[in-house]
Image (cartoon, rainbow, N blue to C red; front, side, top):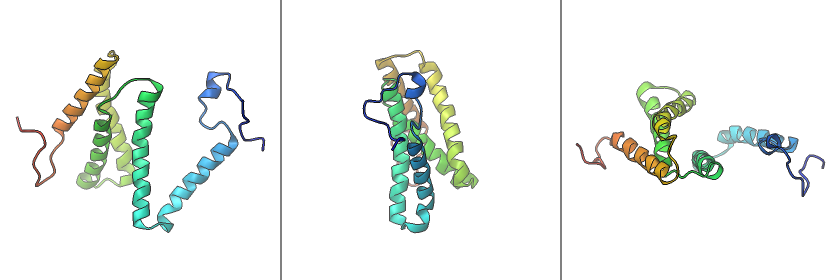
Length: 159
């Protein structure tokens, strides 16, 4: 099997280290896995499908946090605020504007990116603990502006 990476095969350049698919086998397995996931709703029951959906969106949140903490070494306390904002925005677009889910999820990602840029541009010069405090501030601010569900008490007192 020449397509498998042999033991002791070290990457010597940045481009080789940052490649997404180091072998054709890994690329083909990802394509096969994506095809199987596309066919999953046809053969799985609702419970198993809901588990796959939860694994998918929690995996996206974990990958985002891994990029921030693992690759850059920065601390994010308010990571869940942006994740929650994206989830709320996609549900809001579907329920209020009847946007199909297929378009609502990427559009919610674009809106979340815009909100992230509003917080990120001023915080771009911060480092260490101050950056963590700025992400915590983003968490509190986004939670303060989020509407309470109908018929429930708001978590934060009204001003």
